[in-house]
Image (tube, rainbow, N blue to C red; front, side):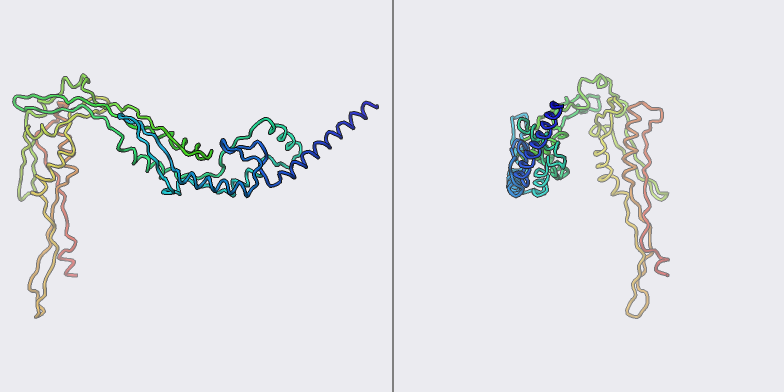
Length: 363
C-alpha cells in the first residue's frame, strides 16, 4: 500500500512537472515559432509573427528581384540566362507573408497538452523542416517565356531528302540527314516550385538531348524509290465550266522540283511537297480561273431616270485545298503504282454568288 501511494505521488508529480513545463514554454512561445522549425534551410524557430512577416516580405522581394536562373547546355558550351529579374514578371510567383507567418506560429500548438509535451521532447534533437504553404505560381506564363528564350538553342533534326539531278536520263541523289537536339522542360516547373517553396533562387540546368531524324539515308527503302513511275509522264490539270476549257501540263521537270520524302505508317514514301504544289496552283493556275462576282447596281440621273444598270453575275474561284489534295493523291498513286493512277486532274471550282442580285434591287 505504501508503494502504491509512492507511485501515485510520483505520477501526479510528473504530470504536474509536465503541465508546469509546457505551460511555461507555451507562455514564452505564445506568439513565436517553436524552436527547431526550419523554412527550407533557414531556421525560423523563436521568431515572432511580426518578425517572420517582415522576414518573408524581404525574402519575397529578393526572390522577385533575383528572378529565375537557368544554365542551358548547348553544343558550344553553356549559356546562362535570368528570367523575370528585377520584378519584370512579379506575378510569376506570389505568397502572403502574413498567412505563412500565422501557419508557422501556430504549428505544434495543439490543445492536447500531451501532444505539446511530446513535440517539445522531439524538437530538442529533431528539426521540423517545412516549405512555403501558400505559394502561387503562374506555370503557363513561366514556361512560355522560357521556351521562347531557349528556342534559339534548339536544333531541329533534318530528314534525308531526294534531289533530282536529271529527268532524262533519270539521275538523282539522296541528301543525308542530320541529327538535332532539344530540351526537355517537363520537370523544370517542379524544380522551380521546389526552390521557391524553400526560399531559394531557382538555378535550373537544362541539358540538351539528341533528336534523331525520321528519315535516314541508310533506310533500305531509298534504294528502290519509284522515281521513274512518278516522273515518266506529265500531269495535266483541266478546268471546264461548259463555256471555256483550260489546260496546264506539269512536266517531269516541274514535278522533279516538288518531290520529297515522307514516312507514312513507318515506311518511307516518295511524295509531292504540299507547299510547292500550293505555290504553283496559287501563282500559275488560280489567276486564270478566278473571277470576282459582279454586284447588281444602277445609277439614276438628274432627271430621275436610270442612266446605267449592271446586272449581277456569279464569280468563280479555284478550290485551292481540293486541287492541292488531288495533286498529292495523283503523285501518291503513281508512287504506289496504283491501278487507279491517272495523268489527268479535273480542277474543282467554287461558284461565288454576288451579295447584291437583281431581285434584291427590285425589292
